[in-house]
Structures are given as structure tokens and as C-alpha cells.
Amino acid sequence: MQGGSSGIGYGLKYQARCIADVKADTDHTSFITGTLSLKEENEVHLIRLSSGGTELICEGLFSHPNEIWDLASCPYDQRIFSTVFSSGESYGAAVWQIPELYGQLNSPQLERIAVLDAHACKIKCILWWPSGRHDKLVSIDDENLFLWSLDSSRKAAQVISKESAGMLHYLSGGAWDPHDVNAVASTCEWSIQFWDLRTMKKTNSIEHAHVRNVDYDTKKKHILVTAEDESGICIWDLRMPKVPIKELPGHTHWTWTVKCNPEYGLILSAGTDSSVNLWLASTSSDDDLTSESSPIESPTRRVDPLLNSYSDYEDSVYGLAWSSREPSIFASLSYDGRVVVESVKPYLSKK
Image (tube, rainbow, N blue to C red; front, top):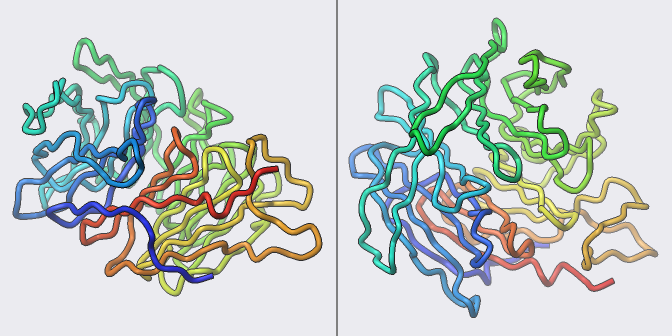
């Protein structure tokens, strides 16, 4: 199904790739995003959906010293987030705290809590402990995984352990397993690698080329979704990792990012074909969703897994984020700095 956007828009001043749900904000549906300008002073925008759900409001606008290539929000403190950034020549990573705003839009500078400065290689991403209050972070660079301990009060982060991915493996990203806090998946050019953080050793791998992004299904154990260079997504059951249990070819160019819904059996994917696809994630006919709502499905016919394609973007879409507070809402970010918030309620039906 093809469809234009009926969503709510918000424009950034510069190009951008990164957007994240502010999971710790339980009072508002809010997102944080950052820009990617080589020549101008970059910005971090804290935005929230209005109480009526009709507009996106800027809650805070902050300067950031470098291009933002990765951004993640702390799961237990809405004022804390991390960035991976580049000055054009070198890459770095830091954890930041948003100052108390007191209703003022022109707020003080971001406070840098910690610098993740142990990397000698190009940093790709920072992963926060999946849920709840915990001081552990994982950072991934071209060649290594680092496990950190973060002490916000002392404004410090210490490396607990690190491990190399091995020769000829160039890591590109990863995801933390929400069902097993000791497990992390990393992506590289020719495989997906699985790590045990207690030993910092690889436990398994899937030999599969050209994976751009990976996400775990938060509702079902063992289910992993990957974004493919070859124009679609794959769904994997990690108990049977030889081949994907589903291949969904819905993009006409590289699929750059994929996100599993935190409550419903839905998946978002986006990429360089300037579209966002909404998928039905069902992996078997007897799937049980534990929420009050489930995607529309007819018992008498096979359902097209592609529920909708949002196709009115003018540039590549690199950023996606589901709202954990309102799981029927997601935000997308295209490279031209356009944020769009959409509701998928038309694709949910009451049981």
C-alpha cells in the first residue's frame, strides 16, 4: 500500500541523520535529534508532541560542537543522552546532560558528563543498557567493543573491558538484546556477531553480507530484524540462524535503518529510496500479542506484510524512532532535516 504523509512536520536548520525517543520522559511524547553540518555550529533539538497531538514543539535547542553521527537517549534520565561526533578528521563520543530549562527556550550550554575517549578507531555507536537504571554503556568502533561504567555524579566513564572483533571484520553498529542484558549483536560487512558481555567473547555469528542496521524484537525472544543493502529487511530466529525466517523486499535502494515496535507486532524500515515502510512483523500464524491491540489481520486470507509506505520524503531517510510512551506513534528523520511524526493507529484494531 502506498501512501503520502498525514503526519506532523518539524524542520531542522541543517542536514541530519539521528533521532531517538526520549524513553525516560513519561509525561510527554518526545524525541531528541541532532544535526550534521560540517561548516556550521551543530544543534540538538528536544521536541515533543503537543497534548492535542497536532504540532511538534521545540522544548530546547542546544549547540553541539561537531557533526552528530549517532545519538541515543538515556533510558532512565530524560536529560541525559549520548552522541558520536566528527570534526571532519577525527571521531569522538560523549555523554551529555541537558540543563534545567525552567521554560526557557534559549537555554544554557549542554553539560558534558563524560568523554568515551578510549577509542583509537572510528566510533560507530553507543548502546545504553536496554531498560531501567544502570550504569553500563557499550560503544562500538570499527574494530572493537567496549563495555563502560558511567558515573554521572563524578562526571566520568571507565572502561570495564574491551574486545577486538578480529582481523578483517569492520564493525558498523549494533543492538543490545532487551531479553538478555549480557548479549549484544554487532554488524559488520559480512556477518552479524553475537557477544557475551560477561566474557567479552563472541558466542555465535550469522554469515550474511551487507547488513546496515539491526534491532531486536522487544516482545519476542530470539527474534532479530536486519536492514539490508539489497533493498529490504530480513527477520531472523536466532535459534535457527542459518537463513532468515522472512525476507521482505520493500525498498528500491539501500535500507538504512530498522526499528521494532515496543508494543505491537510492527516493524519500521527506511532508507535511501526516500521512503518509510510499515510492516506486519508476524513470524507465525499463531502469534500472540500481549497488548490490547493487534495489527489488522483477516483469518481467511494471507495478509500482505507491507501495511503502508510513507513516500513523500524528498531525501534519504536515515532516522527512525518509535515512541515508547505512545507505541502507535513514530518519528522519522530525512537527511534534509525534516522530522515527521506519524500515527499507525489506522493499522491497529481492538481485539
